[in-house]
Image (cartoon, rainbow, N blue to C red; front, side, top):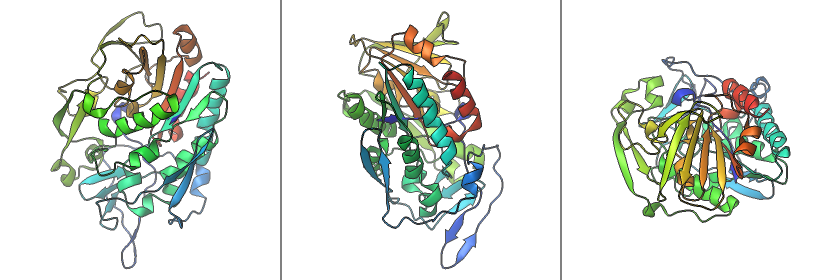
Length: 377
């Protein structure tokens, strides 16, 4: 498996690019009004100067693991017309769905992997996993923004190819997610995946980590209606407001309890609500582990000696609850929220596995990069 992170400051997305090439009968360049919030661009300068093709002749991209090569196929949007869309700053609005524009930033992606490689060298007996989670654009967006320099499969492959070390493994969540594009795996008004989408990434992780995943139907489930997320916040597009999402959740099967802490000492904290069945504010994604916090610790009834630390931004929030049924302890760390020395933290708490889980924008975001580098010193 491969784990990696995506950056979302306080659940806000990061986007790249501001121009769209629309092919109809002729080439039109469509530009719409600016978004209401600022979005950090994540492209390397060198990648802006690189000419790339907007088509992929064999429609496939290699997504290698550290130990093996897995073929990943760029999947055409199953239900939406790739021509019928518009661009508002760095966001594509297509039907009732809005998605961030991604661009491959090769230098930043390779640097991200190099930092993880160096970290893993100091902890040779710890399993280190990297999982980069694709976004909705990769499966539902216009072909122009799923191929060439905008291909997330290519970006993920760049990260995984640069990983090295006997204890470092990549997770191909891409292929598992691609099998379920007909399901509700991404929000339409928000940049996150749903809990169902995160579950399929968890299944991909289980194959690499060597445990049996739970069945989705075995979890107690529920939903929170009326979620209009980050994509509406940035665009104020009426079509998003008029077609809200809902948040589906799946409770852990195992008995468990959690705490939220302000720092790595974990000396003072408060109880963590792992799944919130109601969320009072507009950001219903806070349903999962109460959003982004410096350090969270969840202890389960599974006395198997396995302990995992997830290093993540908000994409990891919907994913983390599934691990509770396979680990005795689950630690959730957000580099942006507190200064934790990860090497010391892993040793002090007897952690056996470390999972770097991000969405594709995280490795190139200056804020996230800086925080991760500090954590990995």
